[in-house]
Image (cartoon, rainbow, N blue to C red):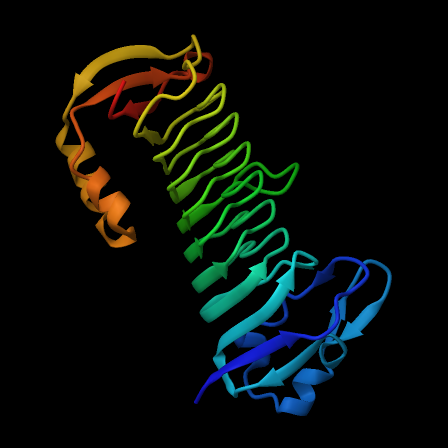
Length: 271
């Protein structure tokens, strides 16, 4: 069977929540039932058939084709199966997902993987602000799973991150890993200002320092700890650049943020 593909045929006038277009919500439904499913917009409700044409019948693999950034919360709450967004994905892709995988063939909006618990998200392009974080007012960001961004990430990537893995092949904006509680963030490109701001625990791994580190981080010398080596080896399944990075070391280790007990660490391969 071929994947259930929803081809965009009309762009909505405002953001539309497409979180219901995921395998567990579509299981057991006929093509006609799927076309009549409601999709809430800003101040009106759309039926799936108004915005999409359908082909294929395997609801465990859902493809949203022709996205233009107005379809938000794609794959939110995903607990199994696959969701693919071809085009410009909107905000909150994979919010609170608990399993399965999401692929974005293009760029993603803000709050990518916000509050996710498990599963994997891969973005071929860039992601906007707050990747791997949580919604405004929430105490925790992502709590498990893995996010891979092949391009650049915006400001506050990994903000309040609690667990999990956030891998950024390109650059990251300001305040990367800010208020981080635990987990691992890797940035292979350049970094914005104040990385690790108010970081409590966790690990931020950098291929290069980018801007100056905050003054509240203390140098711990160059180290090649076994724990670091094992962590690096776990990146081998996420692409060539991360496999190459796994051979880096020893790392320059900085401990902080001393304004929040200083139990976090920033590890830099090249200075």
